[in-house]
Image 1 (cartoon, rainbow, N blue to C red):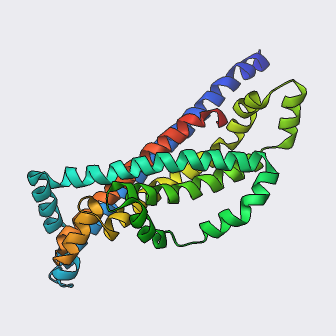
Image 2 (tube, rainbow, N blue to C red):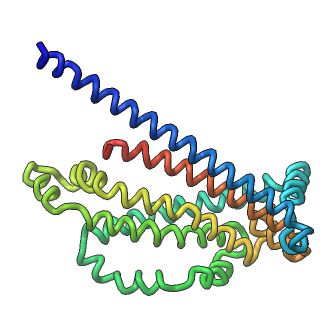
Image 3 (cartoon, rainbow, N blue to C red):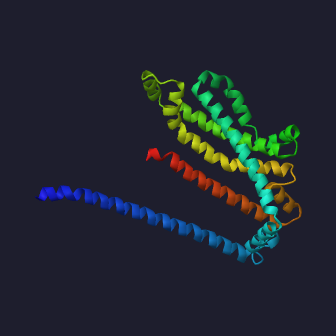
Length: 275
């Protein structure tokens, strides 16, 4: 009877331990969120107090001035026009660069002879400072949005390419040989073996490349444009409008943070099979 009761209590104890661990994780996550908010509030408060008291507002502006500038841009409709232009260039450049980077990385990873031939050329281009390509893109595509898309796409291409290439090369050969023995063709091999194994690498490349896609678009707008967040920041800088510069930076940081959080959620959903 005692052994029966002991056997019956084991699942209950296991369930209780699991519940306690889950509650502990929830509490830790809540504490982490509170700490994050606290750090942000403390920083903004210190910035507001220090501006004009410890540091000249000309150099650092203040949170209240930055907020007033954002409200002014929104009321005049400027913010959404410029932000929309930057996001359009970022998204288009990201999509083009990601598709080309994934396709090239997969081909080079699967067919090592092809990769060996082109590797020195890819490496040489990758080592070039990407900002040095901006004048060339302006000459090729003009001062319109096309040059910003090209700048963003080039940066994303290399990040996605390198991660995809590494992910495909990292697939266990035993799994590939086993799938071939069972009669898997190239498409089945890609779908059921290579893609799941390389998914973590590819998603990491995509996640890392998103902020760089934004950087590429903004850098292109700095070089030559008549709209976009980069143009708005450059214009504010030319007018010595520190609040405007910080307002543009805050919006870019906010957009980058939101996109990154969305990618984290997508990554957790797509890789949920890993436990």
